Each structure stands twice: as structure tokens, then as C-alpha cells.
Amino acid sequence: MSKILDMVHIPKDLKVLSRKELQQLCREIREQMIVRLGAAGGHVGSNLAVIEATVALHYVFNSPSDKLVFDVSHQCYTHKLLTGRKAAYLDPARFYSVSGFTNPEESEHDIFSIGHTSTAISLACGLAKGRDLRGETNRVIAVVGDGSLSGGEAFEGLNHAATLGSNLIIVINDNDMSIAENHGGLYRNLRLLRETNGKADCNFFRALGFDYLFVRDGNDFNEIADALESVKDTDHPVVVHMCTVKGKGYRYAEEERESWHYMGPFDIATGKPLHGAVPTKTYEGLTSRFLADRMRKDPTVTAITAGTPKVLGFEAELRQQFPTQFVDVGIAEGHAVAFSSGIAKNGGKPVFGLSSSFLQRAYDQLSQDLALNRSPAVILVFFAGISQGSQTHMGVFDIPLAMSIPNLIYLAPTCKEEYLRMLEWAMDQNESPVMIRVPGIETVSRNAELLRDYARPARYEIAVHGTDVAILALGKFFHLGSKVREKLETEYGIHATLINPRYITDVDEKTLRALPEYGHRLVVTLEDGVTDGGFGEKIAGFYGNSPMKVLSFGARKEFVNHVTVEEQYNRYHLTANQIISDVIEALSSK
Image 1 (cartoon, helix red, strand yellow):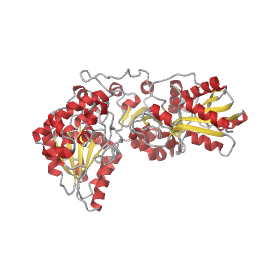
Image 2 (cartoon, helix red, strand yellow; image 1 turned 90 degrees about the vertical axis):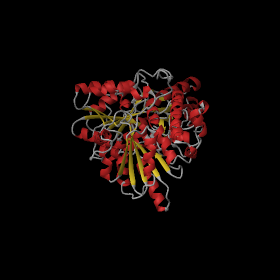
Image 3 (cartoon, helix red, strand yellow; image 1 turned 180 degrees about the vertical axis):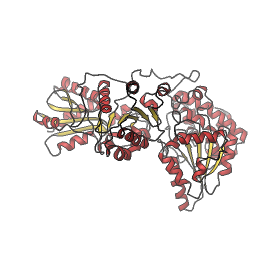
Image 4 (cartoon, rainbow, N blue to C red; image 1 turned 60 degrees about the vertical axis):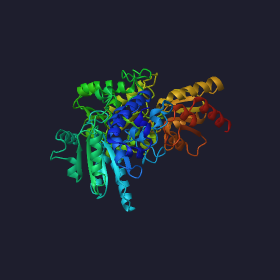
């Protein structure tokens, strides 16, 4: 560990360093950050871009009295290193001891848990207003990446922030990049400001009423520190627009900015991943091939992303093949849903793909703009279910969300064959908006009974006929249900019925009514999501006060931060042996 870094443990330690020493500190942090990222993975490009700016922020301001709010907050690694968590970035044994986002449970310097984009300005407005109401004088600073500006909440926050009339500093980190390339009219103005060193008459921020300061090189410690010093005691809102290099200081990250947005552990010398081989047969790849084929045949087919094109499997080369049919609206899920509704209403065939975690950002548009108007758009929900990631990126809340929206059909395929058939039908029909819960990352096959169409009323697939117990195993949990059924038969002689429900939002009343008639005493539901308001609760509600007992298995309603999938399965009784034990107990008690 080098000399300057040895001296820094908390922000006040920066105050006694000379500018030359602070510049050396930035170099040492970058060197160590690359080592840590190589060993543990993480958000590479964004963190290497803001090292100088973060050191300058803590040098100029006085956290936690002064409040720093990082948008998305996946660029907070240097901030954490400087605020008492240095061991998590220097000691390999501690590399996984902190989350990749700000977290108030870790430190008083982290004001909010933030993992979704475009929120920092609104949160900072609230902090500033609370400060003013209490008659306090601390500073409030929001650090916002240019990609985050495409989100609607960022516009709302900027619009309000300009009217506050007290200290509020918004640092725009402009590296001309979101996760992929930026899209939208705002970015034309940012480009103009970069090209004119902030002197263009056409200035988005000045038009809103902000004072504006341009920083040509946000990776020059002295330049960004001087800019922050000049505005720190402002009595009105100001925007500091700094230009940085995404991936600064690591050649591979600078050259391939999109792929190095996030990276698992990698070999620093070669940039090659250290983890096992990436699956070659994925639902993202399957989706992109299917959509590209449809787009070539039908000019009305449109693939839509909200700043995450790789979710749909559209790498840069494929995007370039469809300059008008592939649309990236920026990180604006609500707009993407309404945009899709408009295309569908006017005869187009929109397919919008996004991660389950981000679906909740578009709830009102799903309900009002899409479902209320019965626009036949297709929405593909990726990365749904229990995962090991951050509490800000949990994919388990989509089922209860969809359950509450009328007119919306949400389907859960069990395999790639069923997924493609559902997708094909959803794009061809013109009656309803359809969501499809993509079943995992790596594709799986099974000899599923495929329907010609998936319109209402719901029709469940009875994969195996049995008695006593009926297992309704939703989506990718069908394979768990199959394992449970086999073990019940081989170990307990119980010949359970195995059902693929196909439909999340709709009930096959005919099948459910028939189960007690055919001797079933217990219904078991399996879903890869929270049970509160979920699929199992819907089935239990159907049976109501009837003698049929329902056991619902799924995730607990809670925020989970970096807990392994295996540990969560055990916590929620989602292993085959736990499910079987609960089934045997339930049968014995009847």
C-alpha cells in the first residue's frame, strides 16, 4: 500500500494534503481500484471516470455534514474508499464486504440506498428543502451521470431544483455515454456544450434558470477542485458540467466502453474474464435472432430498449442493421411503455424488453397508457426471480405488480420452445397488451404442449396426471416442480399431478375446479417471486373457503442485499426436500 493512500482513512484526512499529494492520491486510487475490480468485478467504466471528481468533492466539501447524493450510485467506489471503508478496496479478504451502491447501513456518508437511475436531483431537492426549513446551512450536492438525464425524474428534478433559491449544486458527469451510447435531443446540446467549452448560447441548463459552470477536464484534479471551490457557498442552484472519460486509465475500458460498463472478475493484463464460460445459448440471443428475422420480414416490427440494448441481445453491430426499427429511448422505462402503446395503436408491432427490476418504474404507464387502452404491445421481462444481486436490483416484484392491472396478459413460459411460441402469438394478436416473463438466462428445452394461441380464457398444461397433490409450477420453477413430483413418487409413493400454469395473471377455472373432483386434497404453487399478492395467493383466493388446502412457495416480501440464491432458497423453503417435507406434513394434518 502506497504512502499517500496510507494517510487517508476519512474525508478530513484530505484537508491536510497538498494539491500535488492529492493528485498522487488519485493515481494510487486508480491503480488500486483496477486491482480490486479485476479481482471482484463491478462497475468499471463509471468508477474509473470519477476518481478525481470524488476526491475533489471530499476535499472541498465536508461530508457527512454536506450531503453528497450519487445518481444510480454505481460510481461510488472511491467515495466509499474515502469514507472509512478503505479495506473493502485494498484487502482481498474484504472485497465483498460492501455493496456496489451507496448504503446508509454501511456509513453515515451514504445518505440513501440508490440503484435506479435519475433519482439524485429529486432526492437532493428534498435534502435542500429540509435543510432550509430547519434553518441550517450545510451544502447539498447531486452527482449525476449524463445517461441518467434521459430519465423523466431527472427532468422533473431539474425543473424544480432551478426554483429552490438556496444552495444546491448539481454536478453533471458527462462522459458521452450511458450503458450504451446516448440517445435523444438533450445529448445534442451536451455535445454542443462540449464542443464550445460550455460557451454555446443554446444551453439546456441555463434555459431552465441554473447558473452554469463548464469543466473541460473532469479528470484533472485541479480543474474540478477549483470549480467546486468556486461554487460551494452558492446561495442558489448551480450546475457544474464536467467532462470525464469513462474507464479512465484502463485501456480496455476506455476502448470498449459499453462492454466495460459492468464486468465480472477479469485478468488485468489481458482484459479477459476470469469466470467460467458465458452461456452460448441464452434467451437474450434467442430473442435477438427471432426479432431480427421478424424485423427483416416486417418493417412495422420495432424492438425497443430503455438504455439496456443487450437485454434484448442487440449488440452494437446488430443495432446498426436496424437504424429505424431498433429504438433506444434512453433510461426512460415509463416513456418506453407509452411509446410502445402508441406504436401498437397505430398498427405497428412494438416489442419492449427490460429487466424485471426496472419494470416498476413504469407502473402508471403499464396501467393507464397501455392496459386501459388495450394496446397490443409486447413487453419482455428479463432477469425476473430470486437473484444474488443488490437490494436495488431485485427481480421478484413483477408478478404482484402485473396482478393488479386489468386487461394485461402476463405469461410464464417454461422453456425456449414455449417462449418462442408465446412471443410469436403475442406479436401476431391485436387484442391485448402481453407481457412475457423470460425464464432465466441460459435456454432450456422440454417437450411442452404448445398452444396455438394464448388468449383468454387461461388454459393450463397438465404435464403429468396424478392424484392427492397438484403442483402448479410457474415458469422456470416448472423444473423444480418436476423434481418435487418425481421425489414424491419415488420416495413416498405419492403420484402428484404436475401442472404448467402458463398464465400468471389469469386462472384456468375449469382445471382448478376439476382437481378436487379427481381426488386432489392439496394444491402446491411454486413461483420465483414474492408470494404476497402473487400467483399462489391468487390460486388460494380461488379456492377460498373450500376444503382444498393450498401451500404457496415463493420469496418473502423483503429487500435482500447480496445473499446467495441457495441461501434464499433455504430461507424460503424452496428446495425440493423442504417442499416435500411441508407437503407430507400438510397431507398428514388433513
